[in-house]
Length: 432
View 1 (spheres, rainbow, N blue to C red):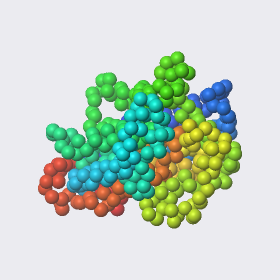
View 2: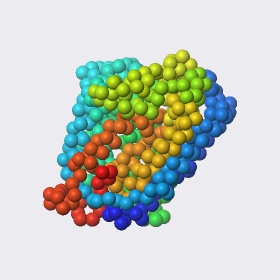
View 3: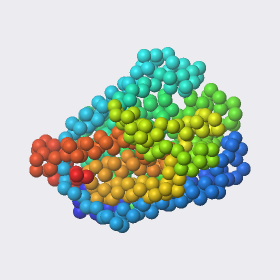
View 4: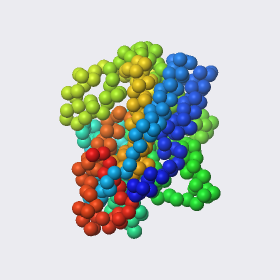
């Protein structure tokens, strides 16, 4: 990684900073979606969203932004003592992810005819989803691939010469994630891998000359990612819904992709507003906030009575919503759980993101990797409440264990491991 002294001067790109990302991209995007919902909306049957919800959502995002700024002002960070990690931790993460994928895709492997029917359009996504393997604590190991990506860059600070198995592992995990995204309609799974890869590449690999096209694209950040996102959506939806149904409704696939992609965000925000309208503010159990706890392997179910076992959002969706557009947004569910105290929770969420950004700049080993994971949740906050989800907990817990238990001071590391890093630019241990 970067020497402690060098990291203190690293500012990077504006979109690496949660506060600037919120103010410069996410809040304006929320404003555009709000204006669309407050206008003459024809694509959604029942509009719950109104001016009150628009203000509440904006305050939530602003509270996050100020929380992210507060950590930087109140508690500057240094890089800590440098450590080295054996590349064998990458082997462990890779095989954990493979075990998870074997369980998840076991049904599809056992019944390939269903997958072939899905590919030729004679079977629906729901037919394939019935074959998805779900074993608590095992299938979620697929999320080890999310931890693998930033840790790969932490161990191999400079591109390794030639092709080694860790580079091949990265390619295999990417292919498995693409298949998961395509077969099980989990676009978020691909975002969780691609975005950390892009962040770590921008942080440690790419140094384009000023004035070049690559430098301009990196400066644009998420704005430059919009065209590839539309292209990915077209590819992902082609077999899933375009050929089987929507080809008869839209004039061309591009118009279809633009409208459907916008609907994923507008319906999520409208669903969140509908949840508050029907179920009330501050009336729900904090199942979204403590999702990571109730999904904890083996012991998670024992905490469910403490957190609350009601499924208020499920009841709302089945009665008043559209099961096809089932995301609740990552904003209004917290008002449903905590009422006005959701703004305090938003500030705490912002503080967590600000803390990870401080570690990102300073070169903390754990926080540098964690920031690449956490920023995905922020980018998707208009659509899904992912920050406290179980799928986020797995990579963060694995990264913490790696740095907490397996990171060794430079002097105690074998020479073969130190050679991967060189003396400078070592990752620090992170939290101790």
